[in-house]
Length: 80
Image 1 (cartoon, rainbow, N blue to C red):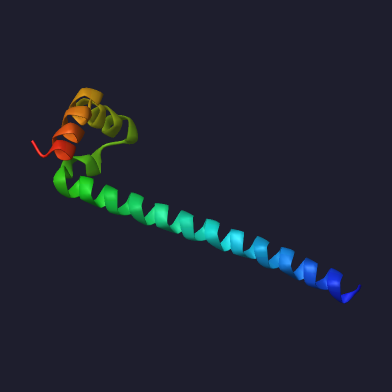
Image 2: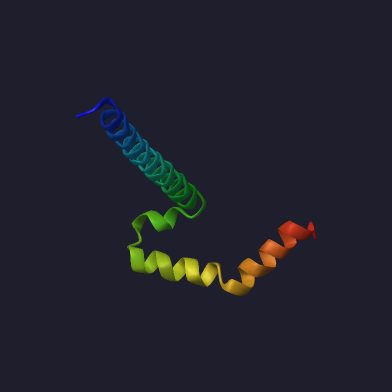
């Protein structure tokens, strides 16, 4: 294998490794965010710790209807 071919192959492998590391970093960041959000939810509404996924989803859908979320976002953005 010639030096040029070897360098191209090495560069390709470096890029692939970098992409893999970036994917792992993004996954870890998402996992951390989900854990923190879950902890906040349990702190604010302790009853959610004993709920299954279906019950929790129903509670969140009731509490965070699209209308309520739009109103909240408008209030936060507008400073009302």
